[in-house]
Image (cartoon, rainbow, N blue to C red; front, side, top):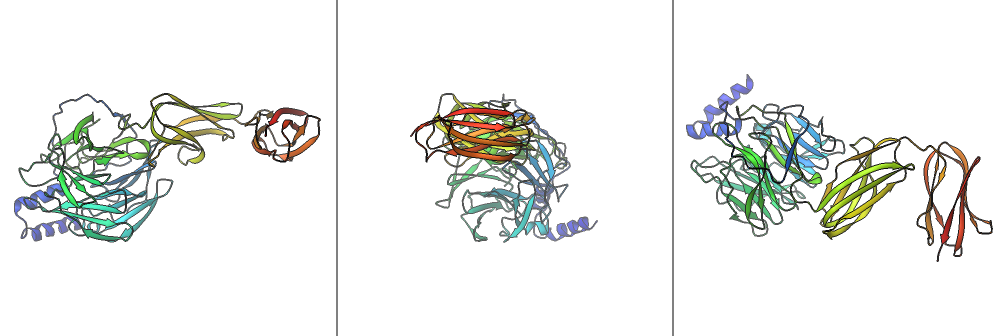
Length: 530
């Protein structure tokens, strides 16, 4: 009742400053309308990303703050659930409850910068004045801190923000005059301060933005009656100037929650209002800055107005979910999808598998092509959520041929282990493979493996396994039978063991490594070659 009375007072007060047409437009833009809107599709076959429905969100959402960081897609606030806080875990396709923002609301601007999520403004007095940052932990939760509020011209519900990849977050908005007056400011992450920048030639409200290289791209938005809503602009960060780019293939309105950038392209993953005549985008559009062209990537899996549509950098996937179904502006949904298999593929991974053999986990993968591939980082997890570094293999750089890789985890976890590859490029960008898993029941026999490398100079690795805790002796002898080194002696835990032998004080020659444990005895030949 209190919120209804405040809204009534606001409308009466605003009537003296806004025309009836402007007042109605402002309210419908910010809150939606019960009038639905259906868009008749002109089907275009998918030619890149394919869509797979994933786990429904625990709550519907729309007009939300969002961002993809590492393994999670975060969703904060919603028009009908203003304190909403959710985190979607990409590897396991599961949702958890996240840490709520300090200021609740909806119509919020958000961007990810330096591994943190920045959230600004939106609808509501308290929300409008709040600029805050979310620092995630490894478990899908995190902490919030309040920053210096943005200028009033850009922190309202009509604004949007984007990180330039460096020290600044840029904010864009416009007023409700006809034609709208545009505003553009930037926030210095290091100094927690704001400054005004060159305004865009034409103002737009609820526009989407993405940053690539030295440019910020502004797509879509709301503006003057009868305006050209295919117009798109880019902002040159270096010169503080604006210029047009190729027009969008169709008129587009609300894109604030559905524009994202990958390594080289700008994606518009749906958008549009879905109410009061605001059309809905039913396709994924891709802008190529090098060619200054737009193209259709794929059809979206559902018709949604005001959805969250974004790119998940670490997994090279698209995320599409929430939004209204077009029956009304507030008929928000819980359904979500992942777009897979599209976009740039610097490394085309054709297979990735793991198997248990002789007490070790053997990982094998093959690439069809590689572009600027610096390395593969092998990660292991006991639960599929918390990942630990296991090892690293050098990539093949750039190659059009098939490349095979093998890595051995010589001490796998007992039970089920999860493995994945983190492929890293020379420019620091990275992506994750799908997850492979294997079950290890434990060591069942005494074993002494061949050392590696062999021949060696001066060091080599020796591995052995014990099915149970045992009193052992691992020693090295020369060819006359004389003991030259005792590596391990005494009570030793069950499992796989790895030790180092250094032959720097010994002459070149053939040596014998012998493992004894009770009645068990085994030996391997070592070749020291200096």
